[in-house]
Amino acid sequence: MRDFASIYQEFQPKIYRYLCHLAGEADAPDLTQAVFLKVSRSLDGFRGESSLATWIYRIATNTAHDHALSSLAKQRGAEVLSDDTGSVDDLPDPDFTGADREYIRREMNACIRGVIDQLPENYRTVLLLSEFEEFTNPEIAEILGLSLDTVKIRLHRARTGLRKAMECQCSLYHDERSELMCDRKTK
Image 1 (cartoon, rainbow, N blue to C red):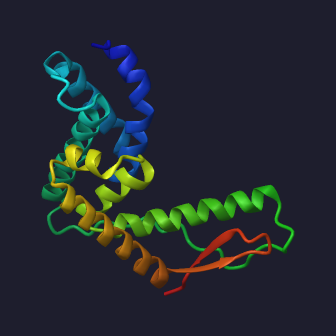
Image 2: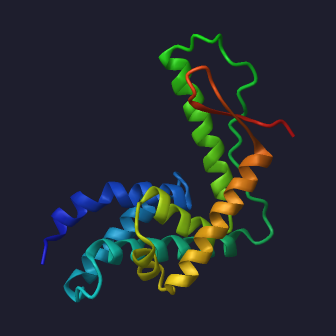
C-alpha cells in the first residue's frame, strides 16, 4: 500500500485539472482539498478491487456531483451567469506572432470549454474522463458505476452534442499553416 504523501503528489494535479473542467476553476481548489481529505480518511479501507486512479477519480466525481447538487439547491431559481470572454473579431495580419497565436488558442480553449460546460452533466463527465483524463471506457464505467454500454452511449451522445454545439457557436477554419482556428459566432 502506498503512503498518502506519494498518492497526493501523483494525483493532486490531475484531480485539480479534472475538477476545473467538471466543476469550474473557482470551486476546484476546495473540491480538490475535499477529495484528498476523503482519500486520506479512506485509504486504509481501500481494498484494491479497482485501480487506485479509478478509486480516486470516483471520489472526485462524486464530490463534484454532490457539490453541484448542493449549489443548485442554494441557487434555486437563480440564473447562473456564464463566463463570456468575448470573441476574436479582427484577426491580426497573416504573420501571427507567437503571442497572437497563444491568444487565439486561449480563445479557442475558452470557446470549447464554454460548449463543454453546456453539455448535460452525465455527458460532460464521460467526455472529460475520456478526452481529457484519457481513461478507457471500462475504467470510466468503473469510476461512474455504470455499465460499459451506458458509457459508450453517453460518450457517443456527448461527442455528437459537442460537435453540433461547436457548429452552432463557432466558426472553424484552417489558417495558412493549416492549423485549426476558431472564432465565436456573434449572436
